[in-house]
Length: 159
Image 1 (cartoon, rainbow, N blue to C red):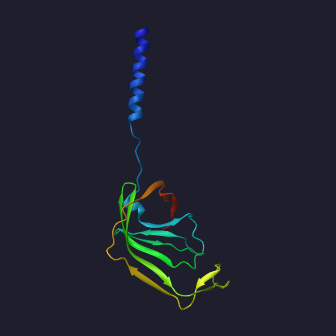
Image 2 (image 1 turned 90 degrees about the vertical axis):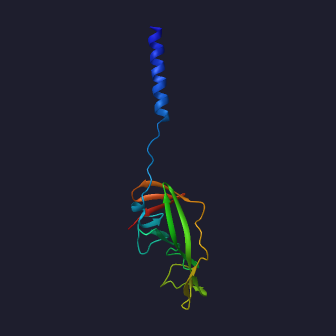
């Protein structure tokens, strides 16, 4: 009787130990699933989209940093290349897009912002000399096929 109890305890211990060592499958986003437009914080587009990434098939990305309420932000866009390795997204910035010009008080008919760039403002793209891949990746957590986290920021696939 005691031998049978010890044998059952040994079998249960072995089984639990084996199960504890099994790794659950990890879900990573694929390159094909990443392609598209990913908006930060909301899946609702409304009258304009907020900060968002556009990932292309050719390994390039555009990060639009503006939102409807950021009329006075001068750095509005980053362009570059991306590389996806499991849950790590590596970025290389190739160019930065700026708005240059005088600020003025926003017109209620045009914007909801207090400040906006004046009518003589210009958009200028500046190439990054000797672009290098950023050594620290963004970590992607898949929430669903249309919802991911990049580091701690939630993004929704809208296109």
